[in-house]
Amino acid sequence: MTRFFLSKIIALLAGIILVIVAYNHNSDSVYVITGKAYGTSWTISSSEYISDHHKEKIESIINKIDYIASNYKEDSEIALINKNFKEYQFISNDLFNILVIAKDVELKSEGFYNIMLGKISSNLGFSPTFNKNLIQKKASTFNLDEKNNSLIRKNNNWFDLSSIAKGYAVQEIHEYLVKNNLSNHLIDIGGEIIINGFNKGKPWSVGIQDPYSFNDSSNYIIQNKNGKFMAIATSGEYRNFKLDSNGNKVTHTINPKTLKSIDNNILSVTVVHEYSSTYADAYATSFNAMGSVNAIRIANENNIALMIMTLDGDEEINLYSDKWYDLNI
Image (tube, rainbow, N blue to C red):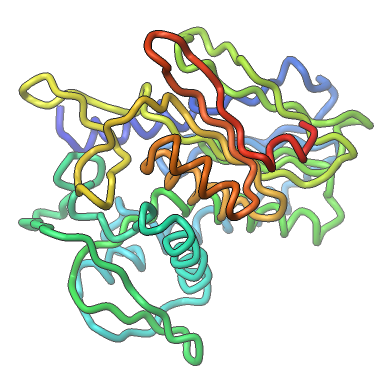
């Protein structure tokens, strides 16, 4: 079994079970459409009928983002950028929008969010190498020229957008649904979730996976009371890992400071963002990478709702940022 195939299986499992949509808490009388994308599954539930025309448009949004941000497609925009180094190059509007948010989170997370660790991720077997000999000795960053949607970088460290692309796709779908008067919905792509409006007059409910449970049980329920928008993203390594030849745990999330898989007591982090699934996705990864002390501090400094499930000795405990309580969830 190849590393490529194993990484696809890990991505699929992680996407399905990191965050569980608590369907048993939601009404049965909803319209549901589903599909496969990004090595995982997607689901949209709505109290309003979603026609075939809208489903086709949603699928086109998903496919568009895949051909921009996928590490698995040799001809995706980001794969071509990785393989054909230029210090200065024009990029698509969507990729530019993704990178603007990635840069903002990089700065606010004090460098614990870094999307230019693709070579390390590939070498660990979490994405294909495309038969390239990949060596990365240090972290690097990028800049953007807002005047003409251009990317600027000084070396050929590869981009890895797996920590932000699904969130961006969820946000794009949400904005499409709202524009088409389908405001009451729950969108889930591999555990990146938006809830908006109501489910037959009731809040949508989302269950957060218990890291120690293998029967898909949840130990925390989030509801969007008053029908407000919520983007929910969870990051955790309790199932998204593998063992190397020496039996050591290798995780998908990489610490940009050490260039190694993270090693901390965090079981999972959950971010609830009030206006952006893209931000929620990126922040969840950064908080997972930096450890609980820094995560709570930075979440409070940036007014972000964060819940961390962590270990204190053998005891599982939950930690919360100040904003988490303000949301009344």
